[in-house]
Amino acid sequence: MPINKSEIFISTGPASRRQVGFALAAVLVSVVIFFAVLPLATRPLAHISAFIPAYESALVIVDLITAVMLFSQFSILRSKALFVLASGYLFTALIAVAHALSFPEVFSSTGLLGAGPQTTVWLYMFWHGGFPLFVILYARFAGEEVKPVKISAAGGPPRGAAGIAILAGVAAVFAIVCGLALVATTNQNHLPVLIVDNQFTATMTGVVSCGCMLSLVAVIVLWRRRPRTVLDLWLFVVMSAWLCDIALSAVLDAGRFDVGWYAGRIYGLLAASSLLVVLLIESAAHYARLAKLSAELGAANDALEQLSNQDALTAIANRRGFDAYLASQITIARRHKRTLALILFDVDGFKAFNDHYGHQAGDECLRRVAAALRSCCRRPADMAARYGGEEFAIILPETELAGATEIAEAARDAVVRLGIRHEHSPASPYVSISGGVAVLRGNGGMIAERLIAVADKALFKAKDLGRNRMVSLQAESEVTVFDSDEAA
Image (cartoon, rainbow, N blue to C red; front, side, top):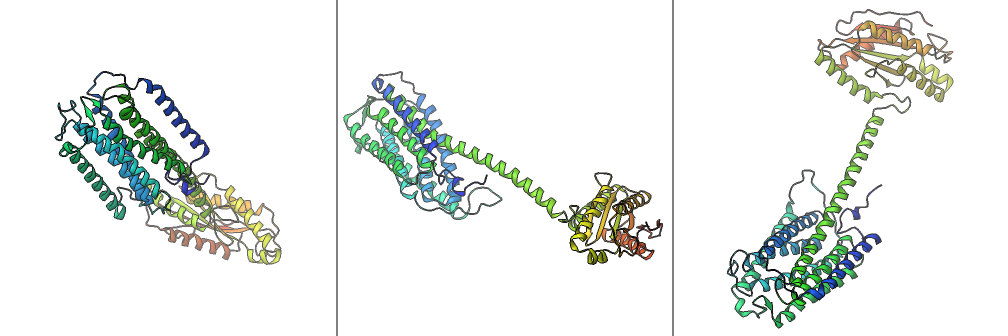
């Protein structure tokens, strides 16, 4: 089945009803779990310092892989929306690194990067307020038409304008994260206090509400987009989980290391992973389609190759197939010092037959002659071909002169026994053939043109001797060793 170009990428492929249903089910499960955890959100749990580096290491890896995959799609589609979204995932990966390094009691008692008591919580605010902005910008640009560019067969990293754009985007995101980290560290004394002794302040609710509103706007914008792509659909799932993450870990809980705080971060990891899982599944599906298409294309190419080497009228090899096979067999014969025999045939008086009986009868005659010659090819390596017009040939690898002459005579007899009436034949009352046999010995310097010339010379000699007979010549010496029969 042919693949629609718009379905190659999840950023352009339309979401099916089944996919919409599956995504809504995922959001429903997320909401159910959210409300199940909600009554326990403020219950304190064990203070596990190793949780942050373990959780955020996984988060960074997932977000970086997602960003790389989205940037690679951007390099093909040149879509602003994909560029913005990839930059957003890169932003979350980099700011998560800063957040983990600055978290107290992880790498040092107060955190690295010159962190203070408010650093990590403000980095969390920048993080969870910044990513929804990237998603909203993605939705703003997602409606623009994209035109896939030609993909280089050499592969490798993106080059040209796409490569420069990606490098610029990476540099810009890195600069933004560094700037936000500086604000949260060197200028933390000028920021409102959001946490005291691991307990959130009243100011925290107002600040985090802005992040919740941005996430809610992103959810609404993604759901309202038309036409809705597969990527839009799964970003909707991501932002729904993201909203639950913020609500549990920064609004409805009491502080760090309670049920809501841990549950919110699990939601965050699920939100980050869901799009990556979809990207990987879609990539695997596309690879499967490509493998199937490659196999079908290979079979089609084989069929076309066979057709290009086959004579349409007689269904045996045509001149192109004859030339290619003869060249390969000469190479083999010379390499292994083996013999190679060639027989050229000509239908006796075919023009007169065609003129008298008509072209349809002439075509049928050629088909039956070709079938008779093909029946004389006794081994898989033997090949019958239509050399041109009413001329035919048989290539016989590893065949001495005597054996080739025997096959030539069998072919002549098979054609005569077809019993095709030919009242104007110069040799017989029935359609007959004349033939010339030439043999190449592998230790000689013979080329295809020379072997054909010798076989052709033998064929002309057979015609001069009265037709309906075979003449054999040794290719190297051109000494006649011909064997002729009486006309049938």
